[in-house]
Length: 93
Image (spheres, rainbow, N blue to C red):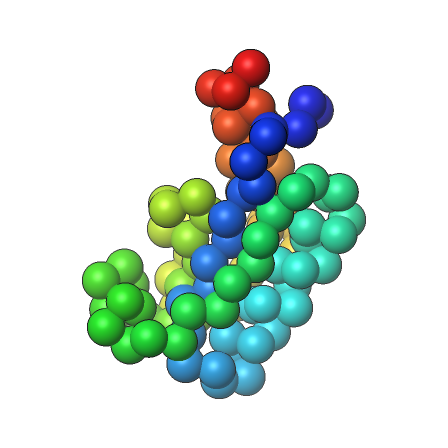
């Protein structure tokens, strides 16, 4: 997989609860495992969260909601991040 020049942006939407923190940890693990350039950001602003999801944790990858209301597995996160990185590389390439 060729690498995009801009990082994949993984935004975890949540108020810092146990499930939200676990989602952040899993997203960071997925990024490390894939070796892609990515930023994992925890968004705690309730107004911003409510613009995207009704249930937390929510996961946005490059502005697309991919999960809401549950903690995705590392494998799921890897798949979504890989797909986004591949799409970015094609668009930039």
